[in-house]
Image 1 (tube, rainbow over the protein chains, first blue to last red):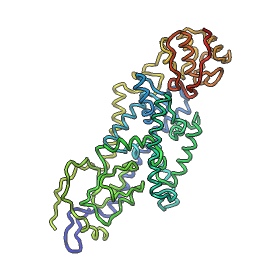
Image 2 (tube, helix red, strand yellow; image 1 turned 180 degrees about the vertical axis):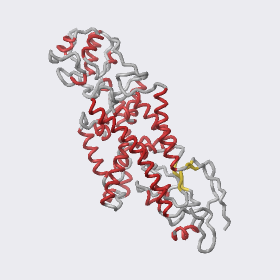
Image 3 (cartoon, chains in turn orange, red; image 1 turned 90 degrees about the vertical axis):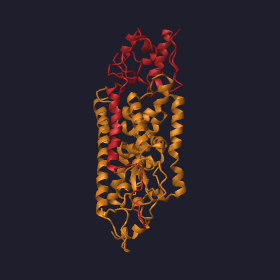
Length: 310
Length: 148
């Protein structure tokens, strides 16, 4: 970290991190997040394989018992019937749903970025593609931005539809189309609809960042809605944000224009922390909500020229 | 230009700490629930880890993983009568689980079995929804007549 002096001899009011420091920080946070994802994915994989090998004899819990979305689907039935669950769900589903919602209230979509195994698998496939094809494909298939944005709303419709249908029908209507359920039940009773969506998601993941999460995940939609009021969010301090710098935009795997946002509230943000680790001035940081109206903003343009020289 | 480096910004959380807090909070809630006994990953055990037992009084207790012999014994219904009613093979073993027989015979499923037993015992007939059954259930399935 260096205190930069501009060409006119003025010292910048904030330190700027050099490129090597940014890269090191990005690698470290990336490693920590990957370690978390690998841990949770391994835990689920153990249950999938164990259940497949030992059969559903109760010695190893069915991995579906760890699905927070199952908790969301059974919650209505649980309340209205005085403690009964829809088929394939248990108390663990409700507990994990509470854990996800609690986590979301504190740290927005950290579950999606740090814990969800389906999100992790999509991340890994997308990274795998980078080994062969470096070019970014942030807006898939050159969709017009308005269409891309409209498609992002599909997940909210999916959420509303299946919650309504599950409440009316009393069973998990989404299970037949759920790629996660299909993945957990590979080799057993995976529904054909879910399998088709799973394969489509995995293939698209090679070209698009998290296609399932971006366009269709109903749990992501629920997290996006609850996350609007979460405590910890990535916030951008305009006073220390360099006007010519777009490193945050380039670091964001979801293709968000972080530079234009004051608070990163988008449901597409999975709190991967790439933008925070890649910010040279620390303008982007996880912060509590501001209770003060900060009017004394520092113009950052003075640092822009100096930063470009680094 | 006068600089002001002492502006009051909201409390910052280190991004590494953020990740650790997220994982700790998530796992903390789950472990907390387990410690308090509010945890079960199977319909075979209750929240305290004790095996679920059929009391023979409430047909809603019947689950897809239960075997015919236990159900017959708990509700005091001859196994043979059950097999005949649902047109299941006469040599169906008492150790067969309900879920393994779904779709066989005459509309056999957890749901239709519950309804049939409820009707036979004269207890309130549960509303037939797939919520109380397993994968094969649908609101349109009907149990065979009890002959009463």
